[in-house]
Length: 629
Image (cartoon, rainbow, N blue to C red; front, side, top):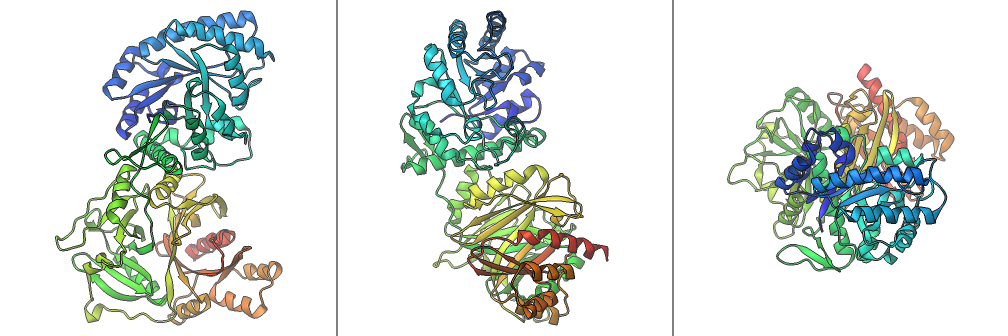
């Protein structure tokens, strides 16, 4: 299917938006009226520019408040419409979006509205233009797609059809299954937008908080499936009003947008049980062809997490790893990278940035995730189709040919083979360290890497969520907000239930770095079967856990049935507690390195699937106090 995007979804001038859409791989655009009015280029030149970039102009939008008005107002509206239709001929656009009247002047008279829409369509047909009528969720008289379709059906003109907008339909919790009863040839255009579920005025919700498919709470696969089942064969077009997107780099946003449509088409194809065409990787659905992505990645867990630190900070990381029972077991053959292991938990400590080829000079932080997958080549093919930037690697010819892509925040994601025949080839790049460099592990054993917490730039939070969802098949949880001492921090976890691969994304709600909020730190969470034993080993190694206020444990006595002696053991180890219907969660934190990186040790009891978000405020306040000492 054709893929289109509304220029209102991108930042910059109209010319910059067109170039960004073309670079990402879109087939067409919806040109928003304000973008054209503000452009120094005349409509014919815009048409020529779009054509030179390989873009069609699929829709001109919007015309507002046309129908359901008195005769004098409609005559003025029709005169204005003629001028716009003539402009569209120059622009090369053959479909115009007409939104339902949202003014107080709208009359409660369906017969009048239908008759006026017919006259508008008759006028448009003289210019070779079609009218796509859309019900705004806040329309004065027409505010749902069923009402809009009744008016279009009554008007009965070949140049008049409906525009279906997922936001206007799904934000009202309407049942979209009735769309299947609309003749496909009368669905002139389809606009797609996702959105987080929010309790607020629908107009403000629409104007500021839409997002791309897969980034919000709507089921766009089912919605779009209904539209295709009706026989729609036009573009899949994104119309997303979002304050962050309109202030972000247009090329990144356009790539993120196309990634969302790729995932949506893939989901539609797979939900219909279609077989991909061998040559093109596409399946057919009715009269349309849906592009199929390479097979989903099936991660089995973390192969490793890489931490980079400058020399003095790296030594503090080594102390923490040793106190947590890690042993320095191997060194990379050609890079200053150490492998630290405890059970199935493996951390690479890097004193240089392998992507840049020079000594790491920033704060200690997580710089790479190694993900175990059965077919790294397929994972890389899927990543490339999803426009994930590949990362070039400087390596010795004898080293493993690991493939990696960059996440939106710059974190490298490596695809590591986990097949039983090949073992783990990346480990062959490491040899035993010299005797004087080896450090023995001790204390309690860990079960693996439970999750990784990554701070995101403010304008990449939704992009990162879609990146991990589309690339690794992780399912996003509902976002939660935590009160840090210096502002709110939003967090969203993404999980693969089959493999327990978990990534938690954090962002300051106010934007900027806000490193003084606890949300400004990154962390690696390590799983265990006995959190008390690991906490005891940490203290015996001379490292005190993050100090949790006594008030927290006094509160535990009020709201839990934990035994007094258990609460006292928790107080000694800085251990926090959370509970759900499925089970319990016990966890503690290490001191923070450079105010940026810390480790967490977690024990999941029963079927607990959360992350202890209820304790986030306490943790961030404790880290603030730690930095002040």
